[in-house]
Image (cartoon, rainbow, N blue to C red; front, top):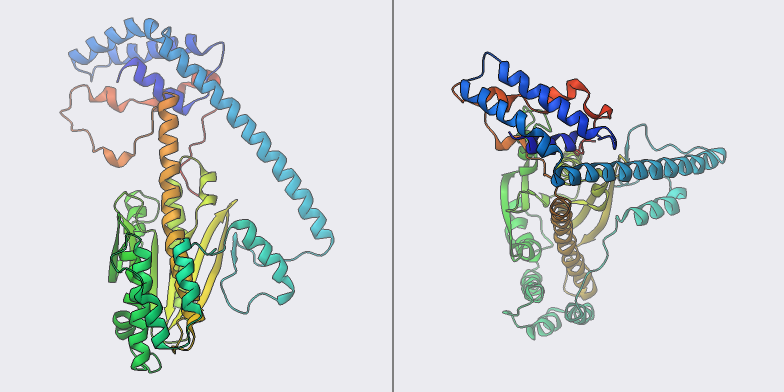
Length: 443
């Protein structure tokens, strides 16, 4: 631990004072090294090093890099002050709007910091316009995301009324096209034609039958083709919960959550999407509550990776539920401390080959969902990279996770120096400033 390293650490945890920072740094660092020089528990070598660092601290504190650090610290204070004043003004305006609405008659949904728009038949229809407005403003919608070539072929599929026309339409697609989505459309339609030919979708089947004969080729196949991602199938456990436990963000005794399908990546962001399946039409409340909680946990974990708490409102945790041939696409967002659950899309896989429009609509939903999932992941990566670039631009020292370190051994020479970090300075009230609020991502 050098003088420069300690000043960098202090700049991340304290507000500096424009006039008195350098003199205060010199005094506090000098006292710190004097204590280490006279500490009986320290080795002779550690005491000599403390004396050497004490003698060089004036040169370090008066150096240009330290001046840059102090200037950066002051600029960050100005930005935080601006954000705080801006947020205060926004809250004031929002409170005024709420008071105006309250005079017209108060509307309460529940007493929690959560809005659940995913439960069927729970909200009176007179609130439809209000709910639609909330979902639009929150970005909780599944917009069609298609290329021109995909759109053209899906339009042709929507006009089909039998197996023969469906097969003829997709037959022109090159199975080994560089655009894997077109290959997926071809394989999915061909698989549906086979199921229609044997009238297999109209019967009663167990969960494994749907998983092998239906979901695999007309849903999961597209996820398997995404480069840089991997899928986990049947009786797998959520990595998000494991990551939260590893970082002490949830109780260590929290049970792992078992899922039917997980779409994940190898970059440390963990599960980006999951799916649950049931061979019955009836929706399982147990599965719904489990999925809601897991999406909330995903947002909580992602927020711990992001540089600012406000970044989380741009992300959307997604999951799906299959009940026989019914597909529900669920979503969760965290906006201004409020959890919002919503059903983005509910659609059925057509039972017969005379509904080409239904097939096209289903495939459009799947293609759009996969792109929404991957966009969500790319947004997380982009925000993390932007923060890292800012750290380089402003010479900031990024915080290192505690999981990178182990306990020092008793025989470590000079261990008392490494153990005496910024906690000692917090007790002295360095800079007469306020301690910074760390963006730890908790809500």
